[in-house]
Image 1: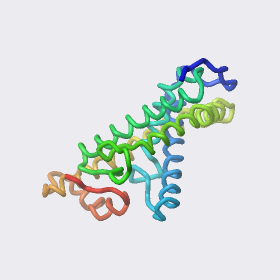
Image 2: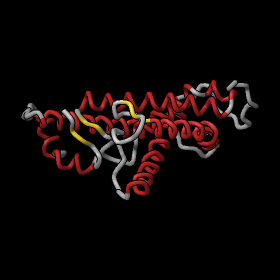
Image 3: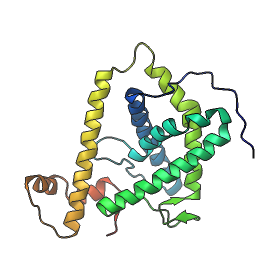
Image 4: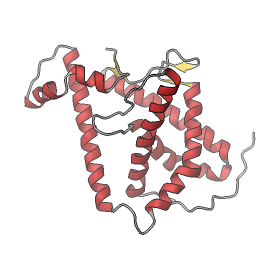
Length: 222
């Protein structure tokens, strides 16, 4: 199959997205990702489960990071058509998903998903079917989602940059708190008592039962 340049898209998007555009790409994709995964799990397995990756709010960090990486890495493939975006997105998304699975296991001793039961999987972290979904997601994002988001963000009545910074700080705090709670759970699983006031607070506020109930499909594997 030969890649030839297609006609450029008519809707203008920033050649080099700034923090403002990338943050909203991350935020919107993370929320949409939670919705898609929740519906998929309900329709495929008949199970309603929380697919958020943080303690507060419906945010999937993997989907958000995927949208940012698609935006930064795939824009050069736009002129080469849909297949280039599809295969580029499948490669980027699969690599991201594998890395995130490995990182969560290394840091927290947890697996938030497993494809061990799926054909053509790699260490249970990624599989061919979901690589296909990543490619499709990249195509939809680059052709529809990202241009539409830029059109909204560049109109006169748009979210202010001050509000963007406030939301970014809140999201960072949410991620940091989630990471701290999961790290402390890993310590508790290994029998380590609280060593300071922060760890004692995490034990009281975020015990194992609460975390395992919140992250409904997570498994401790150390």
